[in-house]
Length: 499
Ligand code: NAD
Image (cartoon, rainbow, N blue to C red; front, side, top):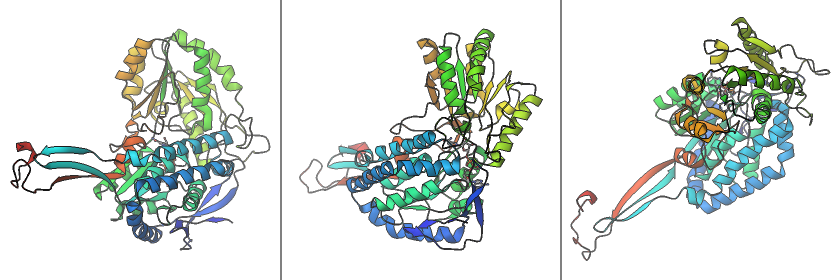
């Protein structure tokens, strides 16, 4: 059995490997490898390597740091096919989605290549007599990133690219379900010229996460995953005095106004609800048509389009989506479908019990459409995280805006309309962090920042863009004067407020 080890100080760790977790091939259901589950001992090694390497890396001028990121970007591009296949083999998403996952991560690397500009401080000349004030952004020191299974390339790079660009050492704790891509990224960083100890990978479960949260040398923790764990990470990390940003779950709504182009909406929904088997925090698993007439027209178009979706293995170029990540994920999704039916919703297309010929043990779930879902149902309030689209009918625009606004999650939302005024009102009023207007998956580009509201994010700094630079740096402000007796006021010190 292949064993996946930590990547510490530029190589494999070779520590105690007694605790391990299975890595499946979601297409076949077979175990393909095991990842070691580490704890305090492995983390201690990684922290020691980070402490040894970080001061020199922070002292490296930002242009040289950026050059390493440029080389890394080129290496990832050169290895794109290999990485995409590796990603699909553990996650189950189709190759095109894996390429997208890597590409979105690379866009953050491109942003981070501009770090000489992005990390510049501010300067005020003459804040008082002979007094200048300037600020600099210094790295936090050692940061950690705890990442989910669903974007094993993009999310480690959201965090890691900005963390290392700003002069930190970064320790990634990837999902124990698909840890191989972050590991390859660590190797490619080393090949690109990043010093050993600056981008490391430690594997594990709660034990490793707790070791990270309690370690006094780690100054910042970035987390992405489900909300209860995000909240736990936020509370425990903050209590230990760390800077913490913790992104959680989602249940994004797509509001469809009567004037929307329904063919475009259906096309967008197929990708947004079923792409990557719905295992995206920016998927659109809830559609809210406004008015029964809109709902009926939309449903009539959705049914044949969903029935035509092709579910296949992750390397099938014709497949719209592949298996979900584990047997547990499949069972959980199917349980939510059953719950929706028990709650009185209408199962229009039921994807339970789906088996792909020749891959009967794979973790496949058929596309599912559920109508007449209401805001009193558990299956509406909770994240299903599978290829399931729920229709919640609203009578009015106001009712439609209220649904995502009152929902416990507030990650993304989309509005489909041709009416500019309605769109503007919607964007201003809706209580959600990322809004798409005729854009089904409004993931902000890398130089803006990513972050939801309510139980979709704990802490107050978003991922990547300038928010990321802020998270991974501390501001130091210097007030200076060089008295020589010749300037106004001579050697007498006058504080700026009195100047
Ligand atoms: P998860 O919460 O199960 O795991 C995330 C990380 O937490 C993993 O590294 C895991 O090892 C660790 N972990 C798991 N159990 C833990 C525990 N008890 N204590 C401490 N750490 C623990 O999430 P997942 O299933 O890997 O990912 C899917 C979830 O992530 C979904 O809820 C999805 O919406 C969310 N997500 C959110 C965003 C966002 O930006 N808001 C992006 C992607 C995914």
